[in-house]
Amino acid sequence: MKFSMKTYFQPSFLLCVAVLAGAGVGKKAILDYTGAKLNKLPIPLKKPFDLLDEDLLGPYKAISKTKIENKDVEKELGTDMYIQWVLEDTEAAPTSPTRLCSLFITYYTGNPDRIPHVPEECFVGGGYEEVAGERDTLELNLEFSLDRSPATGDQDISLAPGQNGNSRQLRARYLVFAPKNSVMWSKAANFARMYFFKVNDSYASNRVETQKVMYQNVLGKYSYFCKVEWGFSAGAAGGDVLAGKEEIARASEKFFSVLLPILERDHWPDW
Image (cartoon, rainbow, N blue to C red; front, side):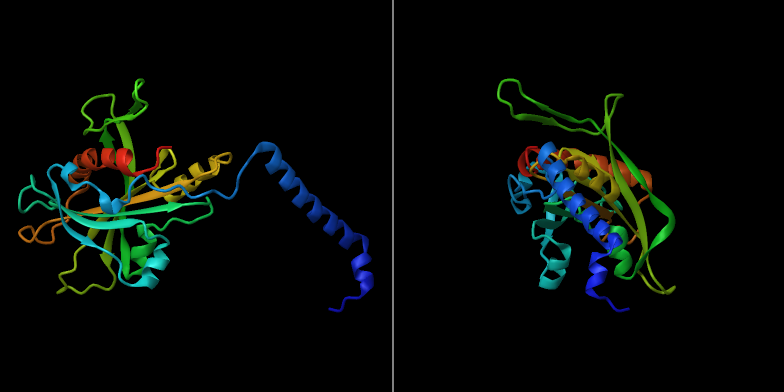
């Protein structure tokens, strides 16, 4: 197709240029008028996750802390603000399938267009597949109290496993994976992973909810989200037994009644 100078003076072409120019000017005018901010500024953690106070973890003891050695993998992760810990529940039976908790926390700041990494993509890309019927929402009953002290303004944080009608449910994604093309003599077992997001001043159970919360923050200067991912396994004495969903839910409630107040008080930004 050949174009000449006459093409650029055709009414249809000039109309398209006018519409696009008007849209650009109109968008800027709307943003200026409303104060909306599409580009968010990063907001730092109160304290890096690496400095999480292990003395506050109660019955849980960190037995492993790992860092991603491959810089390409860390670049793909999109952040260097993370921890990968394995914690042992010293109160659990030696053979309990929830004695060990593998914890992976990643923190991101910035624009709502950023796409959070989620296990259902990462593990499938790594050679696993989701087990049919094992993709659900885990309802964790925790009694939340994140009120501020009238005298000091500090957060008065209290969480415990929910035991009455005042408990607030923390919704998390629940997934079960299996190795692809596993053979009958392979010892590789199915495993479950759970995750939720803390995004600005809210919690979300999946990526869509996370982005929805971020887009609602149109007037804010700052924005962040943090993915908390975990899974349970047995110690050496327990073998490769996968805990049932209800057992995982109870173990998760116990674990986050300890961990979540620490994250809220000492690490996540004071929104």
